[in-house]
Image (tube, rainbow, N blue to C red):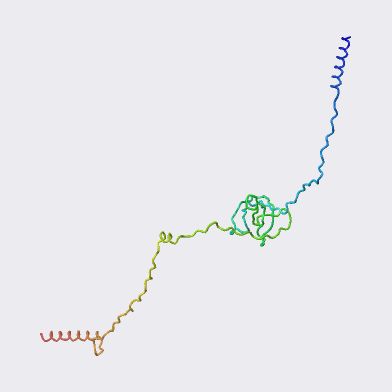
Length: 205
């Protein structure tokens, strides 16, 4: 009797183990919780006007304002590089672009150096304030006087006109008061001398 109960119990245990192995619980379907509010949809926004550097230019400078004299250069754009444009200057020569890394992430490029990639109307923008220098250098007058020699002013030499040039003139004076030519007098004296010599020679004979 005891062996029969023991056998029945062993069979029940084996049956229970087989039933446990064969049983596969059904997976409960998991449903995600649906949000009750509205879900915002992400939509792309157009970039607007885009400008690009002409390919025949190696690079162009980017300035903090619409002028090469009043505003400093803040960077460069390479050939073919593109940038979103925000507006154009009042004279139409400069275009404001998006340029990260500078104050406000905006800068200006010279309009003839870039081409508009997307058609659009650019609003006119005013020029930003010109940068002011941090300090204005001043020269100490005492230090300037110590290191910069003062050159005394000298009077210009006065011009004294020379004495007037006197050209001496010689008046030819006639030695003969009778206005007799000198040659005629010499010839006459010579003739008289020769005549005296001839008379003396004849008297000696």
